Image (cartoon, rainbow, N blue to C red; front, side, top):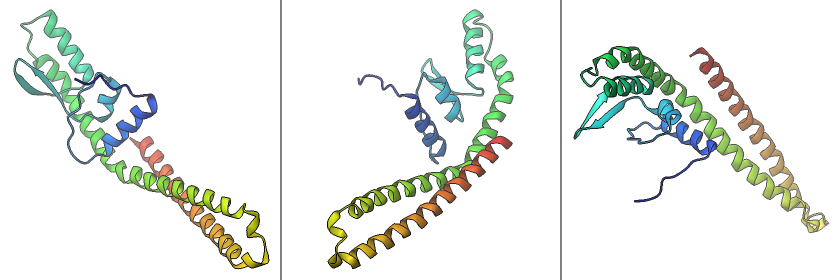
Amino acid sequence: MSPPITLDLEMRQSLAVALQDYPGAVVLVSHDRHLLNAVADEFLIVGNGRAELFDGDLEDYARWLSASQQAPAMPAEAALSAAANSRQRRQVEAQARARLAPLRAAIDVSEKALNALAAQRASLEESLASPGLYVPAEKSRLQALLADRQRLARETAAAEEAWLEASEQLEASSRCD
């Protein structure tokens, strides 16, 4: 068996965002309550050779577990009655994540474009720093590089604008929820 993987806060947040945006199904086993609350739409109770859907959140589970340990005769129905609102809340949160997914995807596309443009710009600036470029024989190459720098500046401004617009829309939509 492999040792457990420990994630720093940035990786934990990246994992949560990736799982929220993932369109398929994932079985996630974790002790990280924040991660579970952020990404899980459903919880299962596994025990006694069975796996059953738990109609509640982690707080409901803690109450159910506490109640079942203190009073074994108390059925899970007590926790399930409190869980009805939790299920509705999780459904609303899942709908909000689905609604915000295109904005997150647009932000991701813009960030990737900005990273690619930054790499191109760094390479271009390195070429422009070459002293041999500033001789009469290299005039056409210099002009081409300067035109590329202008093109990169326009593309960077457009990507930054797209990122800013999507980020503002995501922030505004998040505040409405």
